[in-house]
Image 1: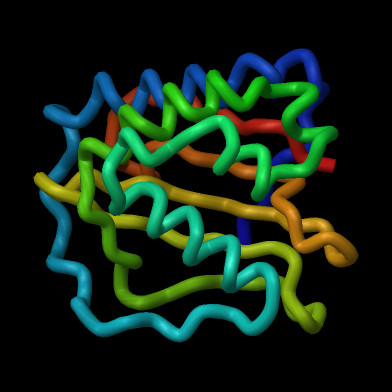
Image 2: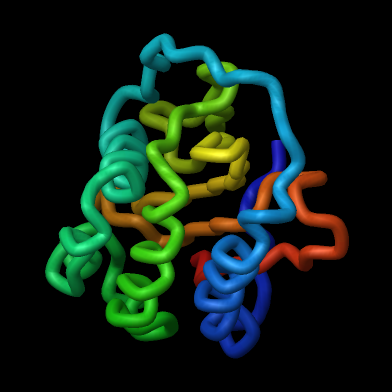
Length: 167
């Protein structure tokens, strides 16, 4: 399972916006992929499943509904100190235009701790846009402490993986 790398905060602070730029700019270059199943996946129990659903709902909703207040309510203050909420809003709003998204093959990989605190999945959107999402939550608060959003493996030749803060 691939989890978020523990990169220095100075590198990862800039990476979230770069990931969104790669996703937004590469939509026309995405390879065609097999159809994802329309079945509703079983989300992990607890806060991780709730945060995964929130990310999917956010990307599938109206980009205008992605607000600083919405981001503030789901990410830890430490995360937001490294990547300001308004940058996250801008980036996620661009990605939301590539939806609606479904979970590829109805598969979510999680850590074995219960309730799980780390998850990985691939979202498939319009024109076979594939986005790899890794998410890490704080066990006590249930808030997101780390989020990796990047083109899925093989989706964009030469794309560099980028991450946001992980604790």
